[in-house]
Image (cartoon, rainbow, N blue to C red; front, side, top):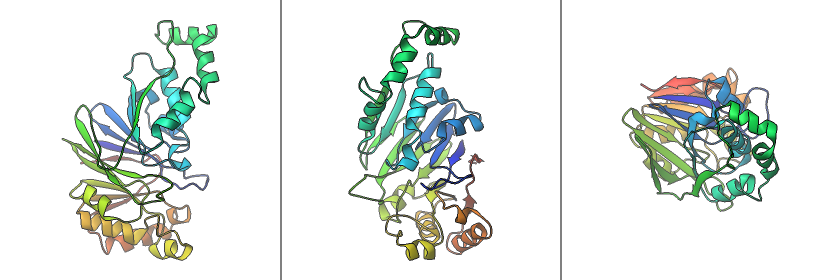
Length: 285
């Protein structure tokens, strides 16, 4: 079991940090959570191809978590020959956004129609092993609510309500349970009991940690996000074995801020703390 950290940043564009996206490898399957900016190209950087991703779960629909969705959808479809149908789940608006991107009247209908109909694109498709006529993109997509579950081949998903920017956007946290271990992805949230309960006893907790607690309180974002103190308290209360810090501000990702942040967390939480970096691959043992 392995976690691929594709993006660890915030909505603010920086040279080194991109929006949220993580992939968990379970056996021969790859399950992706969120699809922030540059996700598709980050997959290539860690040695994964879009057709290898058969399941995508969105935590919520802020652009730093879904901006690369159209590129991923079209790339996966364009490169696929006989891969399983892409399964997409997420909170309210997931199905609507998908339809508006690649549906018959979607924003990218001009793109995929040309790839279906133009002789050069047809030849490319046949060269990859495809057989004409080529079918338009299709995704098995549906919205989820807190408390819903999903069963994979050798794994299960449970969900809980994350507290972020309701009522304007719904947000979900996910727990992935497998024979190899368990991973919880908090998504964007302030510390809350629902996420703690979801993470209880998990092996790995992938948790947002924007900055020092004093920083997020000073700038007035603590009611919507998690900082060092909140991440530490949630991980300790849930009794998780490993805490992976993601969704960090650029300053917080530099020395000596990183070291101080991890030290502050370690005063409350006794488990392993990993400050995630872009393209990091973490074996979960």
